[in-house]
Amino acid sequence: MIAVFDWNTFWDRIFGVDGAFASALFTTIYIAVIAQILGVALGLLLAVMRTSRLRAAQWFSGLYVWVFRGTPVIVQIFFVYFGVNILFGVTVIPNSLNLGAFVLSGAAFAGILALGCNEGAYMREIIRAGIDSVDKGQLEAARSLGMTSRLAMRRVILPQAARVIVPPLGNEFNNMLKTTSLLFFIGVVELWGNAEIGYSQTFKPVEYFAAVAIWYLLLTTIWSLIQARIERRLSASDRDLGAPTLGSRIRDATSFSSRGRA
Amino acid sequence: MTELVLHAADVAKRFGSLEVLKGVSLDVTRGETVCIIGPSGSGKTTFIRCINHLEKIDGGRIEVNGQLIGYREKNGELVEDSARSIARQRTQIGMVFQRFNLFPHMTALQNVMEAPVRVLGQPKAGAETHAKSLLARVGLFEKRDVYPGKLSGGQQQRVAIARALAMKPALMLFDEPTSALDPEVIGEVLEVMAELVKDGVTMIVVTHEMGFAREAADRVVMMDDGQIIESAPPAQFFDAPTSERTKQFLSKIL
Image (cartoon, rainbow over all chains, first blue to last red):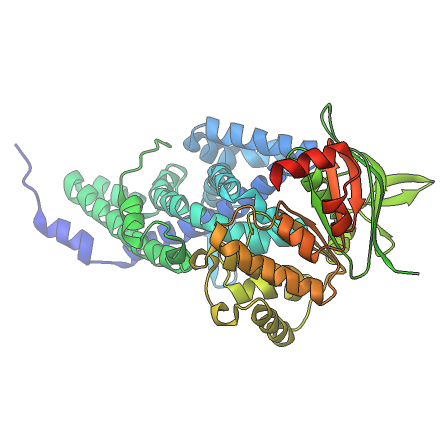
């Protein structure tokens, strides 16, 4: 017997948002957002360490990228969830984390940590490329005005590097939204987990998986619109420089970028 | 006795095995304008970059307003100063670059205000008033809200001069300020610099503009092969140079 596509189930999975689905959607979003923020912070730190005068800091930065880019993210997720407490002999990953009104499961906490650490390695490379893209004369001008390297970085280098960093950063977050689906392997019920559970109860794979694909598409589309807005604001001084137009940036942002992660 | 703003003694600098400066000594007094000329590769740009420690020196010493630059004395030896302390020393030395190096993400006014506000901690309102008056002084008050990308090379360089002046430096350094400009805008930048000379700003100008050196400088210094080989008031320098090398150089460019 060939199963017939059940449109009712399909539409219901898209528009009939129930409590479990809403919670799964929320889980996907907050994990992606927090992990990305963690990744950017780590990436910035690692990028600065790379330019540090301290040999050990440079060395650590390189080692970090080597390890996190060189191993599958799914291995990192499992390692953080199951391995970190054993490795350090203390409870780094608790069973659950009570944040007042909000309780974060240990698996979600481990997932954020793993995805954020993984992202840090990629963000270091992106931020590094951004910093390197700024003309050397800019740092010299800043220093000749009495700026410390820290102030020069914050006021002169990073704002200019941002124009180079933001487009790939947007693509990273697009990736992050989708990569959160791997966390179902350690029991985090996010969008994909919710669809998986539904499918296993109904044996309607096409309906459930097509619907969840559309939800991911919706999330990434909304994000690309937000990204375009951010880039337009950043390019306020660009327009005067004859830099890429908004149109070309959106085309870049929405063009296919493939990077196998899992 | 006249007040020394710059005291450079026996400054040496190497890039690897290449000796770029072989013991350069130069004193500049308050209000004086010194033009440094010489063939490319003679070390003149390296020398003024050493004055605000954009380049580390390998020997000798540099003092601005009596303060040692880039180094401090420890048991009779010179050790490199902390980054913070070097940054503080640079606030009294203004620098104008060949390629302007304005901050492209800031308007002309923001470029001029940035260091007084962020480095010296001046209140914004006061810094803005001062910045506007400086832009007026270089003839660009109307362009205060324009980003550097929309300004001509000559206008950018004038903003860069205003930016350096905003720190009220004791000494202004100009590193070939007109070399990257189109011929028709060189004049407007030199005019602004001549105004500064009249106002008594102490400045060292590395330049190929012999007309400016002759008209505006109190002293012209010729550098060749990492050394100062002639130093004299412009009339004497151009009309009766003593060294053969200077005569040869002048005959080629005049």
